[in-house]
Length: 270
Ligand code: ADP
Image 1 (cartoon, protein in one colour):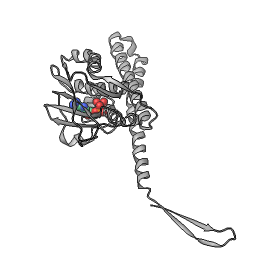
Image 2 (spheres, rainbow, N blue to C red):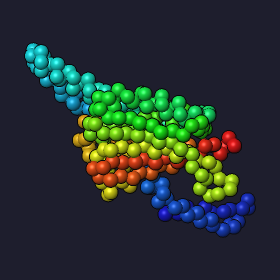
Image 3 (cartoon, helix red, strand yellow):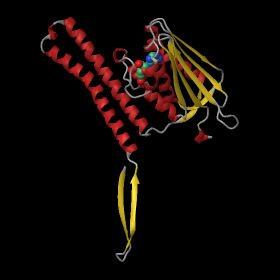
Image 4 (cartoon, rainbow, N blue to C red):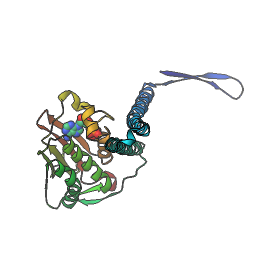
């Protein structure tokens, strides 16, 4: 609690009284703590790939370059780590832009059938590599108002997680339907998008935390699949900017379901 005492004086030096202002600064403190933890996390996440690039480059310079095979494998590591760095920086900038609301969303009507089909096509190559089947079931003639680029980003992040965290030969599926308004008369129609997989699943105790920045159930696994640990927090922010909600259900070893609910029409354009 912060206390400010402000004396109130009239023009002729006569004391009128004292105004006591009490500020509850716990919320501010909490925010500061979250921010400094974020900066610490970011620094740590950035340092790891930089250290790898530096270390392998150094070893190459110190003679490893003379063996072509070793040189090749070290250069591959340097390349992969630079890519990770690139993705990480991209995600961090994206998240900070979204959080500071510096991205005005551009809403337009989106035809969900063709939109989802196109988005799935972008994921085919990575799914094929693991013989994962990608299926969609979208009701006919569904439209919703959305920022197309952001909606695509939401779906891509969830679909690529589905592919990453599903063993070879598994299934990833996206289903889209319109659901009845929650609160009866007058409530906006809602689009429900469910992205499910037959993957490794998420332990119960981790479920509440997976939307946090940099939270990963298994750090090594996320790293080896190229994850930044920011995908789901970006998704959550983007869903909220669409006035929607996201939740997850998961069964360890069986798979996960991410359920999005988004209004068909954005209220400020109604
Ligand atoms: P990452 O870049 O590590 O994938 P995300 O923010 O996208 O970061 O996800 C956070 C964590 O949630 C992941 O590290 C993973 O442990 C877990 N996770 C996300 N999606 C799935 C999924 N479909 N199946 C299993 N675990 C998942």
